Image 1 (tube, rainbow, N blue to C red):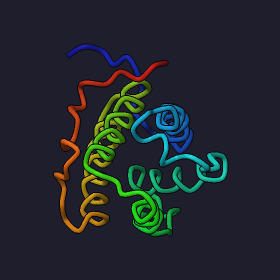
Image 2: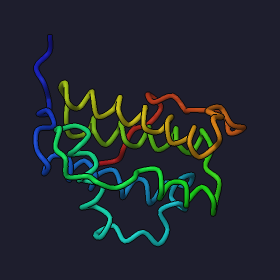
Image 3: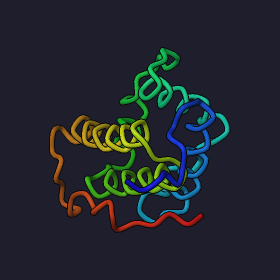
Length: 144
């Protein structure tokens, strides 16, 4: 087994670093970037860091409903499997660029499950859509 190039995700600061890597790529992405238009990243980051800290590090700091803001976005501009697939690509690339290990693997798997779940919840159960479905995760490289 090859030695790790990066440490595993272990702290809130690690999660914040992943999110600070992910969001600029998401904002600039031609497919999903428009969904982030107008988002105050500095106000949003503490909440989304709370979410991932609860999901991966088993804290109880996140007490919001993750579906509500996504349903509102979908109502304004429908999201398809292609959109969620791109989100997953960028999420995986952000995690892989900074971390490796069991928690990093769980972060990537959890991101994909969350994307599929949000797609089901916002689209009435259709996880294929007409946008071609999920794009292969291996197809993306996140710029440093």
